[in-house]
Length: 133
View 1: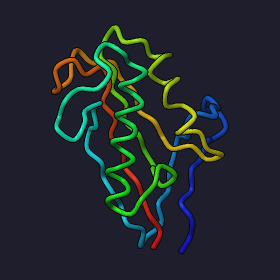
View 2: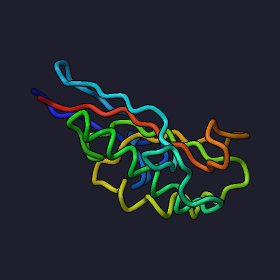
View 3: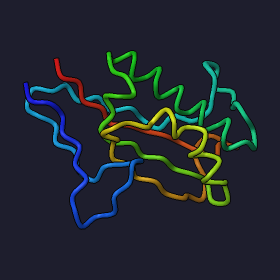
View 4: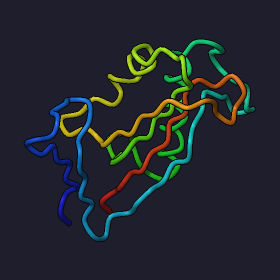
């Protein structure tokens, strides 16, 4: 099976943090991870008011969800990261950047939003992964 290709075309901004295009070959298993907030197993918010702590926990929750489907962070093709308006983006991304770093980084969509479904949540992370089996 052909590998997953992550492409950073000439003419588009070049960043070590993200790619622009991903090509998943036929036969790969696609895994969708719904929005993960910084909550523990009981649904209690972790890191109230601390976007870095919440980002780290939300990513850890995404890692747990991926593992349940037989995937890792390296298998992620696309991340969506939502930050509540006013949250410190540099602190939020700073807490997770090393975990997402790769020679062929995933695609990333990031947005500021007015609020999230979990009261007090400052960040929500979702993912699409592909595993070659």
